Length: 375
Image (cartoon, rainbow, N blue to C red):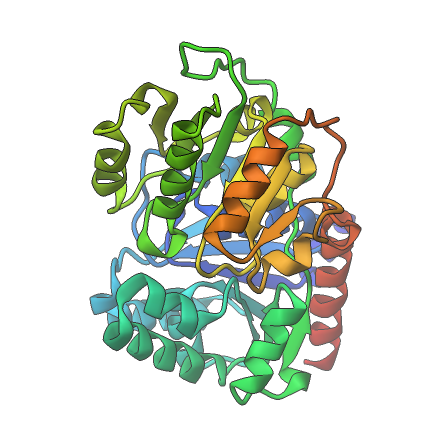
């Protein structure tokens, strides 16, 4: 058919570069973007790592008829080998734009010799997060390498005003930065609410939920300390911890020696946490650093009472005491939780409008089409 032939020739090609296809928050953000772009652009996904069987977005990409290329060069130690294989891919595919996510993909993309416009979608305050996650020495090395790579990009998409200021303060030109707020794939979220689940507690009481990686940066120990104090003071509720990570054993031991251990449940990593968040009453996030948290966005969309630290990223999602609560100290966190345990939420959508999917997608499309015209 001549129409489809012309359309195929006209459609601009976009390569989405990811470290792996594991269904974590930044990769799901890329998937949401792909869903919105695939009718207007030809999308090719390049994964630096190999295919994985569990918790992968591969089936969803295949349902969208998206071509996937695996470089099969896993880990930071194979970064230059991944770069060489990526260059081979670019030599065979005449692409217009490359959009990459996360450190390894950004480094590989930055090394590529191509006429295509390069865009990075940044999820956090890079150096700050790396130091909190990996320690001062390694964190600063990762931060230095990431900033060096990003200087070679045509555009860097940032997800919040705080993040934009952070990059300007770190020597990036405002013209290189594009503010497009993080967003939810709202239709995908609605479909995931249908899963029939029960909260894993014996007693029917209010439930506090948190959903994140169990790493030091997420500071889950603060949540456990605070909730244990509240239980000692006679408050009756449950705490559900969704996620996994290298701090899980320490966190488990923190509550397992208390008389309230039956009130805590570590659910581990699950592919669909939405029904559990929906059935809970209060969402708490005690992170030391965040970009724009997807789990917080989900909780706001579901109308949950959200209590989070007063840090960049959170402040753009939460209008204090209007659609959620920002705390500064452990005492504030304790007092807010104690007060909110007695209040029944009405379950309205509390997510600010600028974080809606259709608005974010419209801004992405405009940016991509403008860059294609410039190119």
